[in-house]
Image 1 (cartoon, one colour):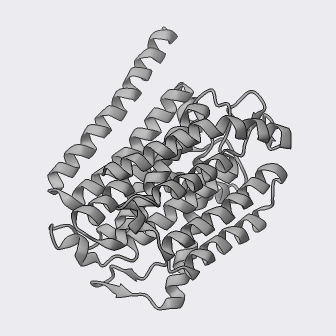
Image 2 (tube, helix red, strand yellow):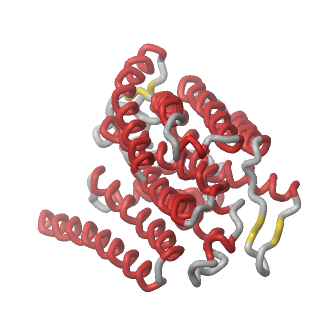
Image 3 (cartoon, helix red, strand yellow):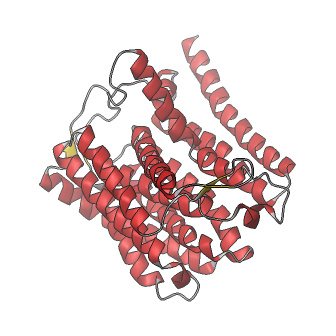
Length: 363
């Protein structure tokens, strides 16, 4: 664990120190965003936060590659995830400057998924009537679709200062806890790569958040949102779509559906927001990717919540879905339910406090 904690600390420190330089670079290069009707910020703000994240990740890998335990996580899959992340970051950086059209971005996301496939990062099975081994072509298609869905889910939720950064950090913590227990405690070598990448994701999010929290001095932009989405999707695939279900369920009475449920519970809030947005826009006769001000964070803001309180509420909702599923894999189900209930009560307390404050002010 000490090596992974060192990895997290290193990535966080690097990202915190590098981001101010990227902020200045983005403003000079014209990679900034003006105030639009759907936005919550009120001043011109630089993007390209993803470039700082990528640089921090790259330097972290160069350093931790010399650590005895973490070094074992480097291999073909790790190379593929790094290359795919690099490609999607560059695509996002170009979009931050030139506002690429949706077709170009979708094509780029599919190419990033293809890079993962070339390096063995692929969904191999589904828990249907036991374990159903997917035909290679079907597994490849599902892999690319999953990667694209997660990338766009993270991109959609990136609409409030610090929101996507915090949510991704929480998702990465859940994935890291699950993969670390499999890799280190249960001795499952295939969980090493997702342990490493999720540790780095946690670190860069922690380091970036002070610059991105309200009021944000820099946005992650598509360079960051698509990069983090790619990293999370790759971690989910290597962690739950390629590992033998018996390695997870043999020690406990956990359901064989758990590996399939884990990515969707960990990523519940971004996926729910994405799904609601697509349905809402299609019903209105608009493109599913036409921007609006009806995301979950917009609705919470309209209820009188501040930027920071809205972020805290959505952080708690993310944790409420993510952590109990991980706990259920290694502990009795009642412990997981109690854990989730505690987080739910905390989120209600945030609502209750704001509701009392709003009503007292109105009177």
